[in-house]
Picture 1: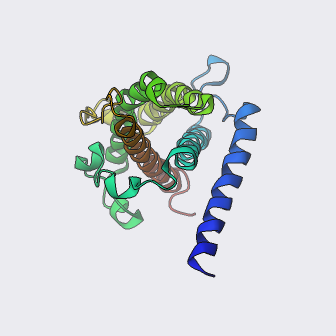
Picture 2: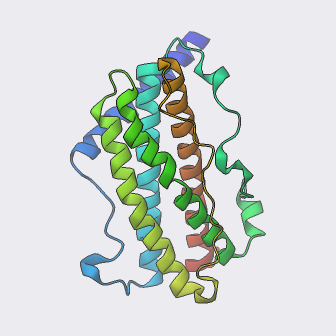
Length: 228
């Protein structure tokens, strides 16, 4: 396949993903509640299933935002070269693969997940409040950012419930990390605003992918005793 053909295939795949996710989003297809009916005594295996489903849903929303922004604003612009090489949370020592994750006690990895999810609060707030400065910003991006903000609260609740059930002695040991290097979305230059939004959503998407993988690994390790 030629380079042009590969590029067209990637664009077509991204567009198909966006169309499918728009349909699910508009139909309000969401994971099950962490505490159905207010009952938070959910068994650990079921709790893990709900949290994993929720984290995957959040990562999908981040991916949808990234794909849509890329489709609308990044084409024919040298965003990739200008994007920051590191994300604000890069200073956190996070495992890059399953082998590295195996070397970390599960309770430590769970608290690391809490640190990452807590760190999303500020950049999400900036996205929601600063999107008005992006020219012709579609409502779907704003809606997804608000949906992620709401679902993050549920994800934090679920991870905290897992720690309380499986490792109560480790509760409250997470690192309080502040995403202090959030690129400003309040700049006067239009391209600078677009680039700041791109950098933010790229880093949020990267971190949500890590959280999703960590939770799936922990479910396999804790619930299924690595039999998966």
